[in-house]
Image (cartoon, one colour):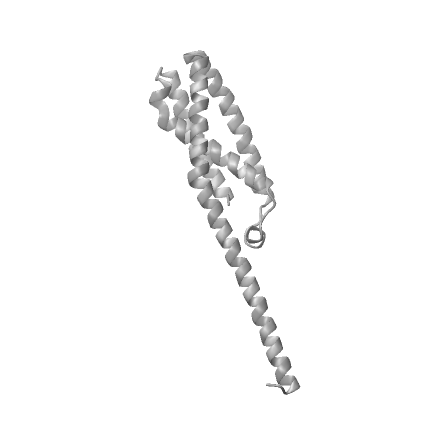
Length: 163
């Protein structure tokens, strides 16, 4: 579940990594030497894309009751996506101009690997936690309904004189 704070963090981390990438490229560093900045930027872009995907899904019961999406989050996600698109275009121009088209293809491969790792490690764990929370919420609702029905039946039996 992405909130405005985590989206804001992804944006700030992505911007910092992007500026470091630009500085590194301008200084003539090799793409492989900037792997940590590429990884940070890729993770931030991946987080923003994941937040956008989650915003498009219908909310579950847990999210609806305890923090349904709001309009500000949608605006933040949209703005972050547009910023990522602009950064990607600028990086493509810088990398292709400085290192050639093959370097851009290498960059895309690195970015794809980062996204796959994020999906396997971070997002899957988050989805499992959300599923568990939703299961526990449903279990609590069902148990509360059973307790209310049982209490009602008990008092109905007392009223009828059968208990």
